[in-house]
Amino acid sequence: ALGSPWGHVAVGTAAIWLVFWLHYRGIGNYAALVQLAMVLVVIAAGVVIAVGFGNPPEAFVRAVQAQLHVTLIPPAATPPPDLSSFVSVCTLFIFAYGGISAAPFLGGEARDRERTVPSGIFWGWATALILFTLVAAAVFQAAPWWAIVQLIHAGKSSYTTTPGLVGLLASPPVASGLNLLVALIVGKTIAPQMLGTSRLVFAWAEDHLLPEVFSRTSRHKTPHAALLVSAGVGTLSLLQSALVGWSIGVTFRSIAILLVLALLGVGVLNLRWGRRFARAPWREAVAQGPLVVVAALLAILIPLVLIASVLVVPKAPLVFQPAFQALVAVLLGVWLYGWGERRAQRRGISVALIEEQLPLE
Image 1 (cartoon, one colour):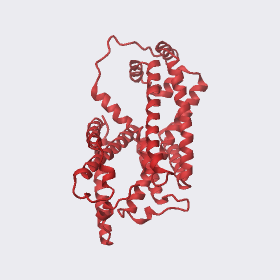
Image 2 (image 1 turned 180 degrees about the vertical axis):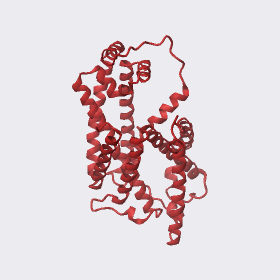
Image 3 (image 1 turned 30 degrees about the vertical axis):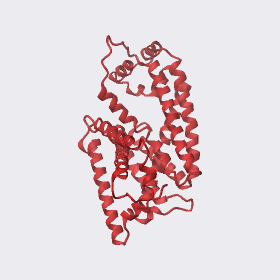
Image 4 (image 1 turned 90 degrees about the horizontal axis):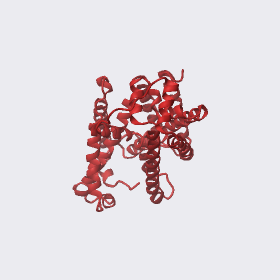
C-alpha cells in the first residue's frame, strides 16, 4: 500500500511535516539531522561500493537470469557517445547537488561563519563528488550500461535503481537494509531544501518585498511563517510528483537551481560594470577578483546549455512540461517582485535603497 501513489503521498506528507517540526524547533535540530544523514550516506555508499566492486559483470548477468528470468546479451557494437544525452543527464543531476545551496543560507546562523561556511561548502562539495564518483563506478562495474538498458526494455525498471541492482547481487538482509538507508537519505533532502527556501522568504520579507509576518521568528528563533509556506508548497509539489510523475518535479527543480545560478552571474556582471551599485559599500567584496568575470560568464553559459536539454519531457501534457512550469515560475516571480516593490513604496520604503545597503550575510 505504501508503494502506491497515494501511499507515496501519505509517507511524503508525513516526512515533509516532520522536517517542518524539526526546523521549527530550532536550527540545532537541523544540524543534528544533517550529521546523522551524513553517517547514513557514508554507510550506504560503502555498501554499494563493496557490492559493486566485489562482483564482476558476469555475476550480475547470471543473477538477472536466475531471479528475473531475463536473458541479457551484450551488444555487438557500442553506439557512439551522444552529447545531448550526456548533457541531459548532467542537468538532472543538478537536482542532487541542490542541497549544497543550503550552506550559504546559514550565513546568519552559523558560528564563525566567515570560516565555517566557505570551508563547509568546499568540503561538502568534495565529499559528494568523491562518493558520487565511487558509487557510479561501482554500479557500472558490476552492471554494464547495456544491461541496464535491456532491463528497462524488459519492463524491469525497478531493478535499475542502485538499491535494485545491489538487491540482485547481495543477500536479502543487505538489500533490505540498503533500501531503508536510501529511503532515509532521499527523505532527508527535504531538510536543506526547506531551510533554503524558508530563509529566502525570510530575507525577502526583511527587504520589505513580502509581508512582515514572514520575517518574524518563533521563540525557537526560527522563521515559522516562512517555514510554513515552504512546507505547504512542498506538499503541493509532492502531489504532482506522486500522481503525475516525479521526473517532472526533478527536472523543474534542476531548472530552478540553474536559473538562480544564471541570474547570479548576471548580477555579478552588473556589479562589476553597472552604474547603479557603483557606490554600494559591499560591491567591491563581491565583484572584484581575477576570475570573477570568467566565473560569472560560465554561470550564465552553462545553465543555458543545460536548461535547453530538458525543457521538454516526451508525452507529458503542456501544463506539466518543465518549460511551461518554468515560465509560470518566472512570471510569478516577476509579479511578486513588482507587487512587493509597489507595496513598499506606498509605505514610504525604497527597495532600491535597501539593495544598495545590502549587508554581507
